[in-house]
Structure formats: structure tokens, C-alpha cells
Amino acid sequence: MFETIVALATAPIKSALSIIRLSGDDVLDVVSKCCSKDLRDIKERTILYASIVDKGEKIDDVVLLVYKGPKSFTGEDSVEIICHGSPLISKQIVEVCMQNGARMATNGEFSSRAFMHNKIDLVQAEAINDVINATTKEAKKLNLLSLDGKTSELLKPIKTRLADILSLIEVNIDYPEYEDIEVANKDKVVAVSNELVEKIDLLIADGQKAQIINEGVKVAIVGKPNVGKSSLLNAFLGEDRAIVTEVAGTTRDVIEGHVNIDGVVLHLYDTAGIHESNDRIESIGIEKSKKTINDADVVIVVLDGSNELDDEDKRILEYTKELHPIVVYNKADISSQDGRLSISALNNNIEPLIKKIKEVIGLDEISFSKPALNNARQIGLLKKAKEAILKAKQDAENDLTIDLVSVSLLEAYTAILEILGEANQMDLAKEIFSRFCVGK
Ligand SMILES: Nc1nc2c(ncn2[C@@H]2O[C@H](COP(=O)(O)OP(=O)(O)OP(=O)(O)O)[C@@H](O)[C@H]2O)c(=O)[nH]1
Ligand SMILES: [Mg+2]
Figure 1 (cartoon, helix red, strand yellow):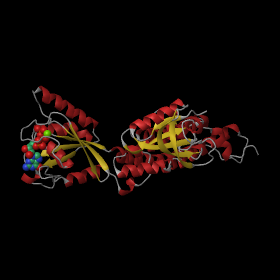
Figure 2: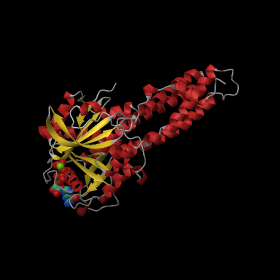
Figure 3: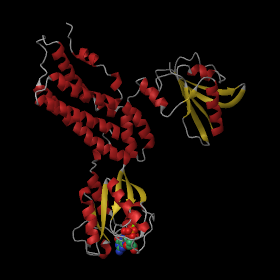
Figure 4: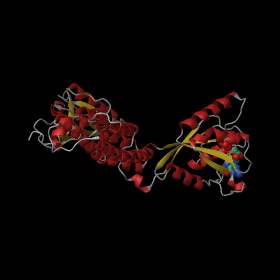
């Protein structure tokens, strides 16, 4: 029994129209009780013009979209009420629906119903949120591919291959007397493991690129005082976001800005100049700079190209060494460029740096249109599956018995199913018998 849930699907602000959404087993009954028309006998998707009423009094004239399950988003009978866009009206309609048997939906409950009724898998469910939250058209395009199920498709060959080898092992163990069944031995496990790891590695690499398109890249701008870090932030943003002065130690706090560079959002963090300071406030800023450096995906060390490097510059280069920073020489307008990566933040001439950042991020054209698993949960589970397969391979190479080897393979299979949200529906027996005609 799926209770009828109700929620306002649009923003609670004045607008032309608002949509209230309901879904559940007795939704047609619930709405009929507060509507000028009876929906109970509706057999297929229908659009109706009607009034919503509360104890004989009209709340609003509305358009009703009535869906008969399973042909609806949730897979259940559903109704969408399109009313006038007044927060007061939508509130009254939600309330009257609740008085007649609906309850308020919780976060994501409509999507979770769609998932429970197998209308979408977990990757698709996550994509709904990602489509809504996308800040670039490139990210939205990738998430629409996931919503269409194209990303989930990528897992099919891996899932099938794992099920193949697992069922082969099962059959070998349970029916050793069958001679016409392929033997699940060490060589077979090693070969399949190699093949799977190669496939998963490709998915992880593509997934990390897609994650960048979805979430952007954190870029820390660091350097000693007065080299032009804040000027660089302003040049990126095309506006005077951070205060720029010739006084060393101008920036005290971390200043954030966001810019879209060919479909990738750079989350830029301009930091306080790092140096030895006795000023208490500045010292706090410097500590924050160091934290920002450690959280960043890309670190830009800004040097003043018009001066010789000094100990402070060298210390910062040393401090960031392991993070493989982009080292850029600013103030190219008043210094020689000497074939090094040079810019002039003051003159908004930062093209060479942007080119370098794009190079470091390493996205190719194709990354923007290729379906890929694209969030930390999905990529984390892919990595877990890979580790488990490597363990199975190692166990096989160490001549462990095949049933022990299969424990890790099963773990990998579960991780792949978990990505799709199918882990608790796993029915390996069904998989086995769909492949082998054992009962012949
Ligand atoms: N000629 C020239 N001057 C620049 C350039 N970029 C910045 N400056 C000057 O350098 C001085 C310091 O610039 P800021 O951007 O405030 O430097 P900062 O690194 O943020 O300094 P702190 O916040 O003190 O750490 C200012 O007078 C800027 O006008 C440049 O490309 N060329
Ligand atoms: Mg500054």
C-alpha cells in the first residue's frame, strides 16, 4: 500500500502558475473528495478543467493532469494540479488534500517512489537532482544522459561479465559431475579480472572528468604579498571583487569567485599573501591560505615576474611542491617573459594561464558529451568493485580454492549493483539459472 503523498512542486512565490503534485494508491479518491469533478473512474491519462473546493467553497479553478499508473513518473496513479501561482492558493490546496487523506511528501519522495516501482534506477534518481542543480549547460547535458539511463547502460557489460563468472563458479562447485560445463579455474578468473579492471579503469577516468564538469574545480591562488593574486582573481571574474592596493598584506580573508571557462566552473580562492607576519589578523589569514591550498584541486603560485625570486617565494614553492602547482609569473607588462608562463593581471592578459589550467584539468571535447558515472558515491563504488576484483585475481594467483575467490567477485558484483540501487534485489540464483540449462 502506497500512501498518497502531496507537495508543491514549484517555488512558493507569486507567479503565473503553480503545480501541486500527488501520488499514491488512493490519489484519485483523495482529489475527488475536494474537486468539482470525480476522477475515480478515469482509466487513462487525462487533462481536466475543474475547481478545487473546501467544504463547498472554491479555492481555485485548476487544470488537473491525471496519470494512471504505471504510466506516470512514480509508476503509481498520480495527479498534478495546476493552479494560479499564489503561495496562499497552493498552501490551501495542499491543506485540503491533506484533510482528505494525503500526507505531506518528504524530500525526494516522488523520485524514491519512481525508484521503488522500477521506473528509474539510483543513477537516474541522482541525475534528477543533478539536472536541477547544474550551473552550466554542459553539466546539464551530461546529467540528462544519466537521466535517460545512458550512464546506467555503461555498467551492463561489467555486471553481465561478473554474473557469468560467478555462475560458472557456482555451477562448477555444485555440479562437478557435468562434463560439458566450462571449468572455472585460476586462468579463467585472472583473464576475466584483467578484462574487468581495464573496463572499470576507463569508467573511473571518464567519471572523474564528468565529476569536474558537474562540480567544477577548486583553484587556490597563492603567493607572497603584493604579487597580484587579488588582481588575478579580478581578471578572471572581469570585475573588481577583491581589494587591490600597492600595500603588502591587503587581503586578509579568503575571497571566493566563480567563473565558467568553456563549460567548467572554476571556484577561485584568492588568499592572503603568505609570509612571516607578527600581525595577529594577518597571521590568521595566512593560516587560512594554507588550508585553502590543501583543499584545492589546482594550486596557482603567483610570482612577481618584475622582481628576482626571494626566500619567501622559494618557501611557498617548497610548501606547495607536492601539489604540482601551476607557477605563473605576473606583471609581464613590466618584466621580460623569458619563455616562462607569464601574465599581466593588471591588463587582464591571463590567456596563457587559462590555457594552462585547461591543460591541467585535461578535459577533451568528448568528455562533454559522453555518458559517465559522475559523483563521489558512484565513483567510490566503482573503485570498491575494482579493489574486490583485484583481490579475487590475487587469490586465484595464490591458488586459493575457487569458492574463496568467488567471495571477492561477489563483493564486486554487489558494489556494481549498489551503484544502480539494485543490491538488495540481487538474485544470483536467477542469474545462474537464466544462463545454464542445469536441470536438463
Ligand atoms: N604592473 C603590474 N602591476 C600589477 C599587476 N598585477 C597586480 N599589480 C599591482 O600589484 C599591486 C598588488 O596587487 P594585489 O592584487 O593587491 O596583490 P596581492 O598579491 O593580492 O597582495 P596581498 O593581498 O597583499 O597579498 C597592486 O598595486 C597592483 O596594481 C600586473 O600584472 N602588472
Ligand atoms: Mg590580495
